[in-house]
Length: 637
Image 1: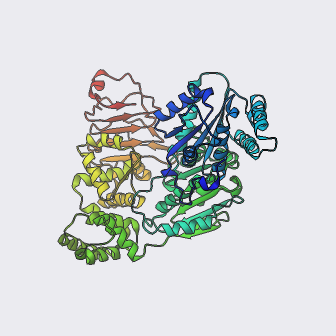
Image 2: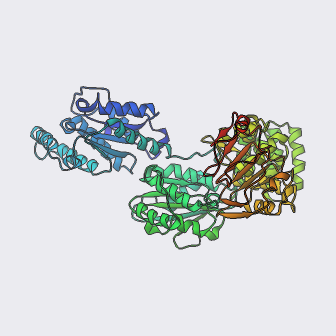
Image 3: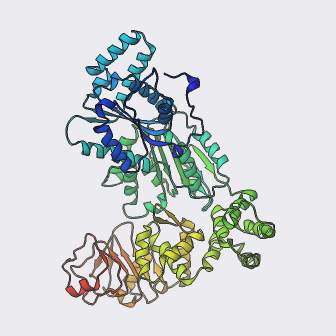
């Protein structure tokens, strides 16, 4: 092995996202270069995985090249292909020792063995061809050679790790499974942070200290709490990205509060955790108790990092994180919440409160959004200080207001300040609404549709629906992103829950005491009341009925007749008696899970519908020819 002074040292600033390679392949060239390992390299490369594969067929000298050492140290995963003659190569064995050292260095390198036409036990205990190879090395270097001892130890250590064994069968199927695991692992490592994280670095250092990351003897649960919009999720993501590589499995479960309120919500969240633990396998659970049993069985064998983001009840913690003895030694569980009382359970022994930004931090964040610099221009200094005062150190408000002031003249800014003086004693919704009030009508409509129906949906899907509503979604969604009222992550529309709440409140204020006069209905109790009382109107543009448990709807069957301007109708987890006898032709989107009739109403011929989704329904798909013609260009499923 190389002397210490010749080696590249990995510093404490290790950043998995900046590594040179995703995968380092260690293999015996004469065994598999032009067969299995070559095919594996090609399959990984085609998936966009950055792979290091040594192209030199002949190696010389007494030690591996520095370039190989650097490649190992700058890789996220090492895949070791143990073949019949692997151990005959002292360069392969030197690579393996280096791989083990990097694996043991704070678990910075994941190592996955492949036993290619050899038995794992033969590698582990150095039998058969491995026994012959090691005997030859001992003859050359001497019986008590430190070098040979390191080689033997490295073979045993790596052969004891979980990996794959191939003896016979289709190699392409075997390679497909390896590529699937690699891509799953790489795709779900870091989480998206967004931009302009101000004041978080000192918090991260304090949280790392509280978590005692380096200790592997105990399990620790930490609660992060603070008011809505204060930056809990952003801080948890930043912390997660700095420590996830130290764990066997890392899971960031975002939006627990909202997701658990939907039908089978907690079960779906349990499935998401278990699926990640099983490297992306599709897991289905019967109920919450089934999930608890499987979580206990799976978690206890791994050192896990689990983040439960935006929790609002102790039941969510109990059903998703249970007790500390659910988890393998060294695991860390982080919980974010607006409600400190949720953390008042024995298992959450450490708590951290996020405070509002200091004035200088708040000014910096506002200026980054408004002026693309971390300080105001002299003529904007007074305006900036006033806005920072109104935002009261709340990062979400500072981002929204900063976007609102972007590209405005000093006169326009001063006019906006007069408006703020009227609302400074009111709540955060009123401050956020300043940006909404300045939008064009079509942009407001898109904003309210997303807030009520499409938060979390794919960008392309929403654009297709809203395009048919003549709302120019590409432009208007871009406007909302520019105003910091919306974000796009992984091609999905993401809206902060405070901004979403503000949108829903705007709709409520349209008719505070008359549900049927509002433009959108997205709370299931409101929808059920309007349908049962037949109190709808032409004001209604969209309805989403999605109760957390199955509801029976006893109604007239004709309640939609009064809603002749409705564009969006989403119905889930309900049983209607009688079946609907009328559906509006104004619909652009109709999603009705378990539609209760074998046919659509005879007078239903929507000309502009984009998506007709009737899963698990009794509907006879052999629809009338005239209806089929009407649906040209529509996605039917």
